[in-house]
Image (tube, rainbow, N blue to C red; front, side, top):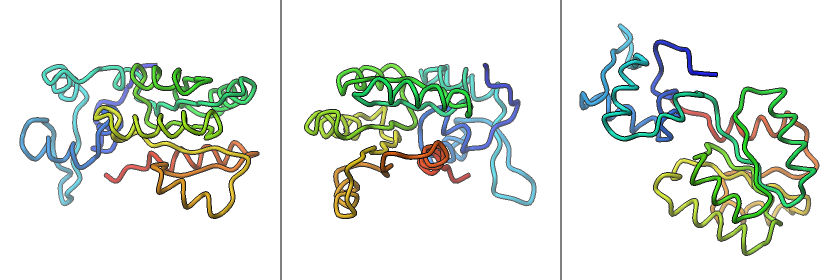
Length: 192
């Protein structure tokens, strides 16, 4: 499903280009990205055609523009969990969903798919999960990817430690679909 809006907000452009909204504002303010301001407001708007020109001129992949949807990567060693989450989120949301059942597979998917959010079972291999989060944090192309930890065994003390370890938020299993959607929306909440 292609992105069909003719005019985009800086938040939407940020999501498409996988950058921070502030970066889009800098592009706009420097004149690199053409658009206009809403009269009587500081809000900026970018025509889709201008964004495509800008992306092509700067070698930004157009994959984000073609779907315009939030990209979510689900990583869990239990295939049933992955399949169930993928089925429910595909049916009930407009997210673009990819999956992996190992930290190695997740790394490969991140390089190719450039997710906005990774839902990661931290028990996929304790050292593998930590190495995966570290590699996401060190990758310039994934610097705005949010990683949400999933676990059935979290204590309150461990949830604080997860933030210190580089996770953006966490979900305690079992969870409801509404909780997963809220975690994804909170992770991708962009300021315009």
